[in-house]
Length: 110
Image 1: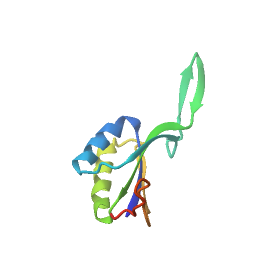
Image 2: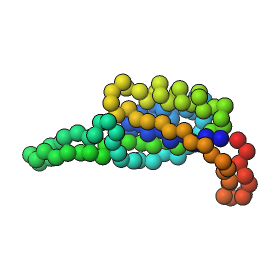
Image 3: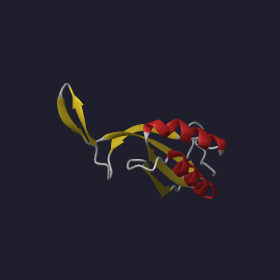
Image 4: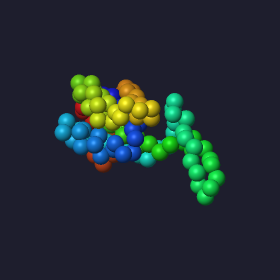
């Protein structure tokens, strides 16, 4: 099992979610996050004063997947979330040793 952490632009969330639904990936956690990478924010003007916005809003999708599905999901997320501009996001893949269902106490078999 692998944990995918996909950090994407907020306006791409629905497109990515729909693309994942076509792969029958339904279990995911979505969080609003803030951060920056190479982009390092931007300048904005509010009430006539310029200020620096260094932490930009992003969405993070987290999914635990069987190893054989990871490559296909990675490909779909990258293709769907890409705009070709700086700030498109990042994907991290982490190993998952075990998972448990809280309601039943059963260990996940993925």
